Image (cartoon, rainbow, N blue to C red; front, side):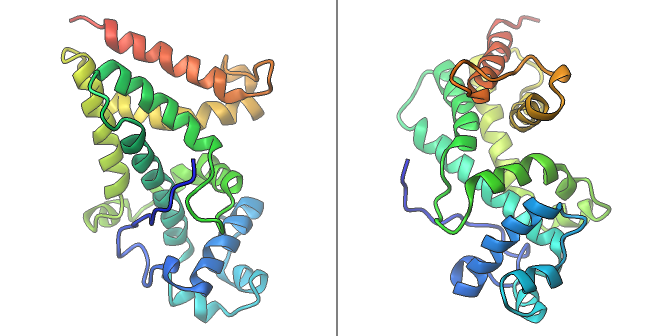
Length: 229
């Protein structure tokens, strides 16, 4: 799907939104490439500056530290997913159908291009898989939460939780289950590739692991639908 859309990330995560300038876009482009190559632990602004033929000072004009750059990338991904859920479920009234659209969108967001050509989709998704929890499991998480840095992810989670509750008002864990759907989409793709004994998700005949993932997630949707107190 080709859509011209600007992804809005919470101000405060960045000093200056990198989407606004050429050098900012280079920070995002090469930041994704380098974090994907090195992992967030080995990634530094010095290495990023060398890769993009610039200076550390220019990067610090956009981000205070590498953890906020990582959070920016993750937030970008989740907001793109939220936009696509709204787009795909537009004018769909049936709650169960809406939830199955959510599942398909979670899986499809992995496969489809991002709205900015300078963002390499596969590298960004690998970062979401391997580094995603590191933006949340940090010492300063409470402070960052108070500043609203996780607002977009929480809004996405609430949206899915509301759809789950509409499918079955008796289901007691809509918020937790929404978060489970979001996290498992990445975890089981990782397991299928690297730790296959931890999942039944595997590549289909056409080589698509995502097809198996969608089937697994739809099994869980059936559990929600059929849950009774």
